[in-house]
Image 1 (tube, rainbow, N blue to C red):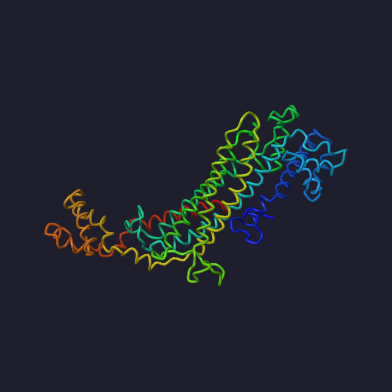
Image 2 (tube, rainbow, N blue to C red):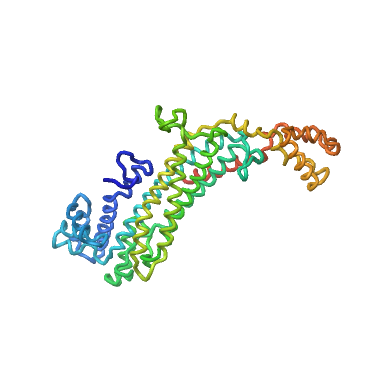
Length: 457
């Protein structure tokens, strides 16, 4: 029976997806190992390292459905090696004549590492695909709300106006950078492993490098002459990029969570299936469950990345202590990262936006949020330092007595005559003071669409 939420059957896929689970499923993992063995045998048969008939038999037999899974299961009750029970079953299935050429010149970690890279290749493709869907949603949000005013916040306090389109454009640019990073590691960091006992290819002598290169070509993985049994930087880089992408998504989800508070009411994640309830005791509530899950998944991904980083500290030419800790952490990172992306895709593409509440919140402090505008209007007439002091003092009085900042300034014997009606226009309509926000949106939209067009070409 399942003991981890990833594998739950009744409460299924709260922290995973069927597609991601299938990538890291135990049988899928064995299939990757057998794919390695088949490609290795095929390569060695082509180069005359092993008999062609044996290579053909291994290629035909190296499939999970062709092996005795009960024997493999019993083998793992005895063996402390990660691959030996599978290799034994494959040898038996191939028969004595051909089975002896299974795994020729390879070592256990060659199989495990290459299988991991095949899994990560599939996972990276899923995350990248779903991030592009998130990007599509953000493109629409940024364009639709290019000029929708809302209050900007810093230190948890109201600052000056922005537009929601600009906020979405910032998210959009960040997601695009992660897509580019994912594409790069998928191209540059997926290396297969084949080196034998300590990476020297000694069992195959001078034929070793050629076997290795052709083997990786068949598997669609990068090739390096140097073994990386204890050089885990590529695995760490892939996991780092997945973690960065997940944390950025958590930041977006957290913003939706915060701005969806009842007191703000500016954003709300999409509702679930009609009739679904969020609270067991409060029927009126619609909790931001998806956003909460994204933040939780990101928390676990960050923690698991530290395990992968620790696993870079390996000893000598092979060090299973570090390898096995990585082996436990990497699938979880990939599954959680991909699941967070699936959830954010739902959030972004179904996000409910309430412009009227954004404007209401922007005007909570009235013309006080235009104090920067007024400071720079005054600065050209009385100097910035003096203008800052005057507005700071006037702002305190306005906040304390709940008066208009403009009224206080007009009543000031020194300042009232300095400010004209044009200076006060924006102060009386602070939503107009959004600077270059709309232009920032336009430039971002253009850049992202250009990048997407290049990908599609």
